[in-house]
Amino acid sequence: MLDTYKKYFRFLVKYRGMFVLFVLMLTVLGVINAINPYFYKLFVEALPEKNYQTILNILILYVGVNLLETGIDVIVYLLGDAVILRAARDVRERVFKKIQDLDFAYHMTNSSGSLISVLKRGDLAYFGMFHELNGLYRILVHLILMLVMFGAINGQIAWLMGASFVISAIASKYLLAYNLTTRKAFNKQEDNVSAVIVDNLINYETVKYFGKEVKEQRRLSKAFVLWIKTLWGFANSFRLIDIVIGLISAAGLWVVLHRTFTLYMSDVIQFSDFILILGFVTSF
Amino acid sequence: MLDTYKKYFRFLVKYRGMFVLFVLMLTVLGVINAINPYFYKLFVEALPEKNYQTILNILILYVGVNLLETGIDVIVYLLGDAVILRAARDVRERVFKKIQDLDFAYHMTNSSGSLISVLKRGDLAYFGMFHELNGLYRILVHLILMLVMFGAINGQIAWLMGASFVISAIASKYLLAYNLTTRKAFNKQEDNVSAVIVDNLINYETVKYFGKEVKEQRRLSKAFVLWIKTLWGFANSFRLIDIVIGLISAAGLWVVLHRTFTLYMSDVIQFSDFILILGFVTSF
Image 1 (cartoon, rainbow over the protein chains, first blue to last red):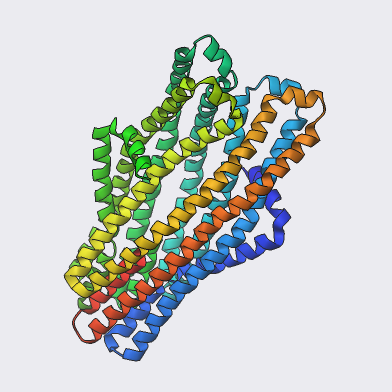
Image 2: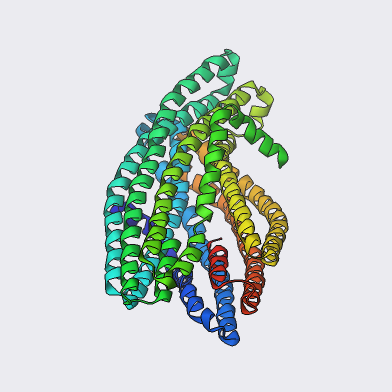
């Protein structure tokens, strides 16, 4: 797994300056995204006083932050594209070169169809990894900001929230390992289906000449039996993630909000803090 | 465009019962998702009175709805998979049959490489369309529920919100048409790159025999020049969507919240209504 990330970053390192700038702007975007629930607190505090100017200022700030978010979002994507588009090309060229350097023996024992399927998947995986890692990074920024804000209100709530995240993270580790196993099983069948289709395209004239179209279609249908079965296994591994993480999140939600509630009832925290915490746990 | 949707639904119709059930559950999920901001209103109303039992009940309801959401989410995906996995297989088998039925002439004028690239893209597009349409449907459910709730508070706010959505929708129509144009240009280059790679795989022995590896790599690099250029065009068309829709949304946000604010100042709407509306426009 670590090796995969190292290979992944090796292609990004070539565009280092751009990549660092990208991560910087992504951090800013993460913070702006995460700050939204803070406006609940501001509004809850300002509204009862009915001071026209104060509320109007918060409103202008809120819409201003929203506009800023759009602007930074565009910049983040532009910077990200500047890195990933070139890196994706580099990956494909490297793989192509690797294939050129392989000897005959390797090529002979693998059908062109499954090789092509593997190549295509490699492309998608690289783009996918870029988006997933960026998504994870934004969650991390969000989490840190949330813990800092909760900590400022009450240490206990921050600890409870943190603990619920650690438990989720540990569960995720095992769930993702299982998800990867089912994915590998599916990939094998996907390559098999691709092999049938590509073989047919390559040997198209022969199939036509001997009138074997129906036989070829039956061959494909047969390949699809295991394809569907393993695809179900892969899809259901996501359902397992949904269920386990969903239950852990609900338990975390209950513990954090119930604690917030009792702290509010004993006047340790304010009304506006309750709404701020609610805003954060809802937005996450 | 309409023709594409007709073709898309033709493959789903085969699993009609399951598909109807899926849409039904998706609607329920959309409503439960959308109802979240309503809890802000409940909390804002209940908290100042400090009635232990009332607040606890809202808290239990809130976590209960969260759990229900997880459960229905899993069911929606199971039903969706039951339809889409089979439909995707059917699509691929149909395309395969179509290729078998084509005559020699067609096959001879198209390289196997670009045909394979087209096939692969077709697979992904079908899955993609399924998720996009479901996403759009959920937004629609969210929008309707929001307009109903806003309407219950104040008709003006509902109309302003609705108008901002209509303007976004009209802009989206033109933006998506442009997005499609840039995508088509990119697809052509993607097929071209695939053709170079697949040709090389198929004629591998010849390339090796004559020692033309470097020439092949140069051929690929050349194909990548237009590939990167059209991919930038495609990527930037998304940035254009972000900017235009972002500006329209910010304008809508300002108009709706400013109106809510003035209505609150003149005591037409309650404090809790302000927070409910804020919750909705933030969650959207």
